[in-house]
Length: 112
Image 1 (cartoon, rainbow, N blue to C red):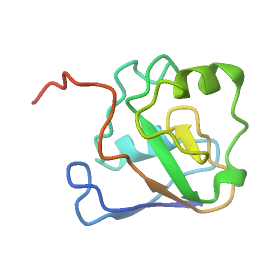
Image 2: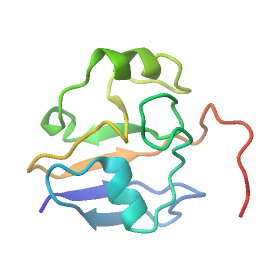
Image 3: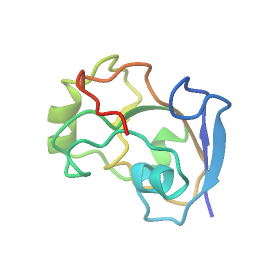
Image 4: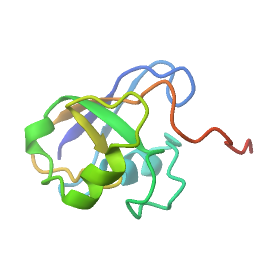
């Protein structure tokens, strides 16, 4: 199974993390299943940018980016050429390394 390496993020995983996920799983699903509570305000429907990640390694192994995702990504804070919506980035067989941006466009996060 592919491994997702998550670089340290002060809120979601301060020490960084490594999680395994089956091919065909989105990065967002894999993070949530492993108790990394990445934002996903639109419930993974490709309608917001709160689950935006930057893929530092393994970008080309992910499922194709479609026009809808490209349009939504245009609104992401800190957009980079290797940016993806984690809800749309589907794992294949290769390991990936991601960085969760420090900020998201969601300025009104709820605290639990």
